[in-house]
Image (cartoon, rainbow, N blue to C red):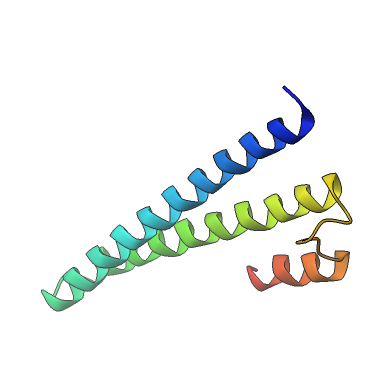
Length: 94
């Protein structure tokens, strides 16, 4: 397997991970909305909201780490980011 092919496969795997996390967050957010509409308990709503937040954070970190890896592998690439841009992206998740 060539480096380009291996990088492409890794990129597809990361994209699947990101999409799975985002879909999980979407489902959890729907549960939060349903719980609020139904007058659910504060504990249940906050627990579900924390799960949504965690899923979104993890997706964001995977996206940033993927961008970092791509910048290291191909610093002159079309979607390459500077160190400062990567740092700013990372810190927006904090």
